[in-house]
Amino acid sequence: QEGETIYDPACGTGGMLLEAVHHVREAGGRVELLWGKLYGQEKNLTTSSIARINLYLHGVEDFQVVRGDTLRQPAFYEGDRLATFDCVIANPPFSLDKWGQDEAKADRFNRYHRGIPPKSKGDYAFISHMIETTYTDPAQDGRVGVIVPHGVLFRGGAEGRIRKSLIEENLLDAVIGLPANLFYGTGIPACILVLDKENAPRRSAIFMVDASKGFIKDGNKNRLRSRDIHQIVDVFNRQVELPGYARRVPYSEIEQNEYNLNIPRYIDSSEPE
Image (cartoon, rainbow, N blue to C red; front, side):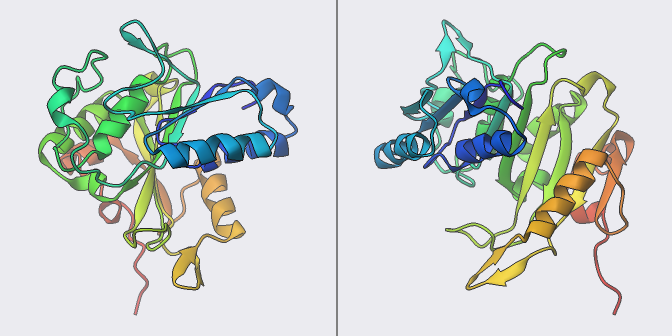
């Protein structure tokens, strides 16, 4: 929304931050009110430089993009407390190996109080960081949107314990399954997790969407069409249940499935022969 703080802890070349600006502009917002509201961190020197150039060339002049390892050395903090933001969005590297588990045990920001993710899979390390960098006051609309591999939904061990804690805290608002072969560098299917602190006390279900079949072939990759994106956004915003596509899954059913969030357990999207 206009005037909100937006943070991407794995900002790459700044694409997600830029799309956030475009979203506010398209909604009629004045981009001046976004200046000074965009924050990003990126480990790669060249990529972080491109992010700064990218934002500047698209008319955003007051932002902070910092080079550094977000999980080992987060850039935005005050004393022993992480800075917090209205909206935290990211497409972090999938299942990052050697993300810094050894240092996580002594993390001064206590980001891993729900559990420490495995050394070879940093997905929940990014998720934990993102949750801790949203506003902690339930009255404020602190929310997270993060793209992750499907393994995050069902892997056990430490990841299973973290996932259970997120569900029991009512933080997980939605799981949106995306088509395979959508992103460069990997062909595996991904999903979007939406976490929302503001409405956590009143949440009794997780909204699940299986959007894995809505795409068009584009060369050797798959691509979401405008109508595919519109359907996902419309169904999510209105919380509409559609057979084989979207439903609200009560916590009691998720508990019966031992906190496994694998989408086919809850949505049958198979087509009859």
